[in-house]
Image 1 (cartoon, rainbow, N blue to C red):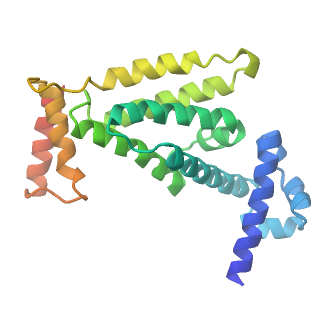
Image 2 (cartoon, rainbow, N blue to C red):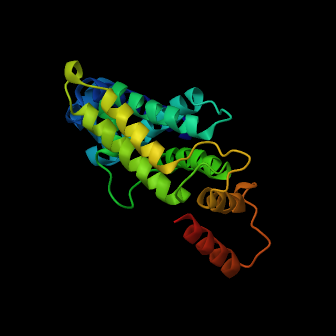
Amino acid sequence: MDEDRRAARHQVLQVAAELLEEGGSEAVSTRAVAAAAGITAPTLYRMFGDKDGLLAELAVHGFERYLAEKREALSRSEDPVADLYRGWDLHVDFGLRHPAFYLLMYGTARPGRKPPAADEAHALLVGLLDRAAADARLRVPVEEASRVVHAATTGATLALIGEEAPHRNLSTSTRLRNIVIGSITTDPPVATATDLASRALALDAALTLEDGAAPPLRDAETALLRDWLHRLAE
């Protein structure tokens, strides 16, 4: 029975997703979704509560689609910074191909109301930045870099979505990408390089990269070491 309910719920979400793609969130009324799915409005309410509940589930569906596409397209290379550039382009491309979903996912964000899939999407970015830090390629701590990249990519994508397609200039995203990623990363270090900031950030990243294993230090000692490393990186 649970399997039947899950299947029915998934079918309704697929119908709602089609309406969303075709007409935006305004087209996803409970009446329209119920009619298109061949169910009654009370049945829809029992599944999702109300329209807000349905839209929240659609946002989760959007993040899952985004993750599936990005995992498939973003194969890991030996250059984490190059992967950052490609990850930016994939993010923007998804938003422009699925603008209604993107607006639902990123344009209606509220503090403390992120679906787990949103955290997983953010974890992909953090993973790329961790690799860059481990290779001494970051100028700033991973947490700061992730905030900067997230804000810039979502801002660029939302701005492009707001433009009419015939007048949309993708070079805006490319220029912003180059400026933002260039400001937080460095060129590959050469054998004689003594870039103290990058080396400090690389050591900071190495403290947690190895399968999540903690360093042989007390928590207070680890926190103090990280504070020193971040100061060296400033």
